[in-house]
Image (cartoon, rainbow, N blue to C red; front, side):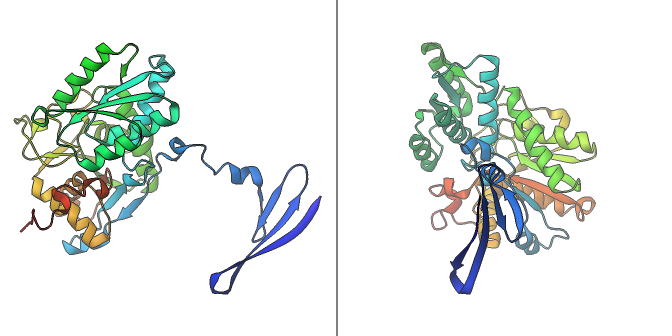
Length: 357
């Protein structure tokens, strides 16, 4: 056995003292008098990025809430803290794991997916780790940052007509699947694993981290997996949790309106996805494009928080709810799907060419 102590100097006159007690087994490291097994320390080192998905933080939007004179601070679920930067990391990992478990996805196979961007980034990360070839079909209207990020992660990108929306990307994905032997479409708009990922992780995290005090949950609807999965989890704990879906006001398909082009990337597919479950949604709030952009800008200017356009839409809807008397003193949690760094070339940060009144 070897015993000893090591003193590490740090700036500003600080020192860290670690005493070692080494033997064949077990090995302990004593930090400030507490013995910790070296295996316990190793257990905190992730094997790859998939082990870092989830457990994203909640944060009060104190300055944003103060700006609008809200009685209680809105709480944000910061999904940009996922390893590939968005809420879709959860979905990407869950769908691939499910396809593997079912035997639908063979080693080295090609994965094809229609995506508006973030799901593609998550899939590219997981596909790289697991050794799959990935082809993504996406509308040509998606930001340059997303396209370049996907290429950097090794994905092959096929752009489709922006006016055709996600429906055009889905049609192209099916065409490619039929032409490539063994290719698999994970179908995020139809795949139950999408919503289940949020039911089993995101929703439970929100319930636990708020100590069950969440009263209202707000999220944008792209595939519908986030809002519906979280809704199921929260309502299992408390059926009275009020769940609000957010969609673009210029394309209000969830409310039975006509689909149309809009500027809120990541939500507002031009159809109602099959995994969207209206029975667990209590209200739909349509958000104008400019209010979503304004919300994203205000998160940056008030909180120092770079968030995407759909995050701006979610926080705008949360503010409208917080201004209602029945919710004024309730805990409202808004899910912010991604980081604003993916929108640097869009209207979100085009302050000179796209000013807002």
